[in-house]
Image (cartoon, rainbow, N blue to C red; front, side, top):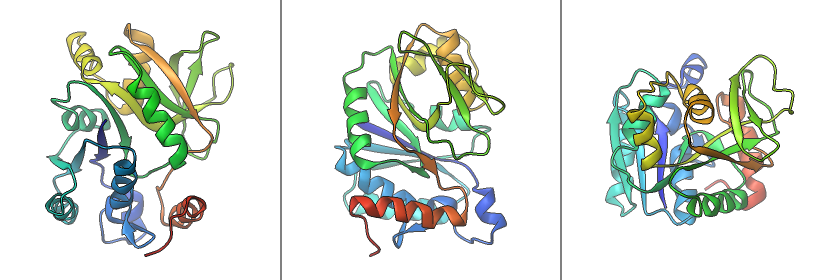
Length: 240
């Protein structure tokens, strides 16, 4: 399986808290969070790990170079993009088959992540497998609408959830090169990842299949680091 890590943002909340390193380099268990994520993806059978990395973060680029030099299959794609969808598009360019994309700060239960990857591997070219969760911690969540037939048919950013129930995006996306090419050929121009998910579910013939995680959250602030470490320690991760 190929993976895409989205690390093109500025991490403005961490900057406001006084952190001097880029958000992907904020440590969890003494390791940059993006390094911890790459370790996890390697355990999930990563063939290649493409990182859409902010080109204005030399510390991050140097760290990714060191991982590649150590023998890890990390492919760095330095980018400066207008929005999060452009980061996804640039980072996934040229991946013809199926791949899993996720943000660099996503925290997911490792056993469920492996099950999710298996679901993505068994999906067809024009089937997307989108991670969802009923664990809502984000201040402005991306609500999903799941039909009675078991497909995601719409998304809504912030506001109120759909009447079908409270379930939100988990920040992980099972896609394919065929899906990305279709979005381009249809002339769709998503302005963000949330807009991309909405258009994919409501405006394209792609079947958007849900995979529900018991818990999923992002590391957006300094206080989230302790939360992430406490959670991941349940799966054997410890400070180095």
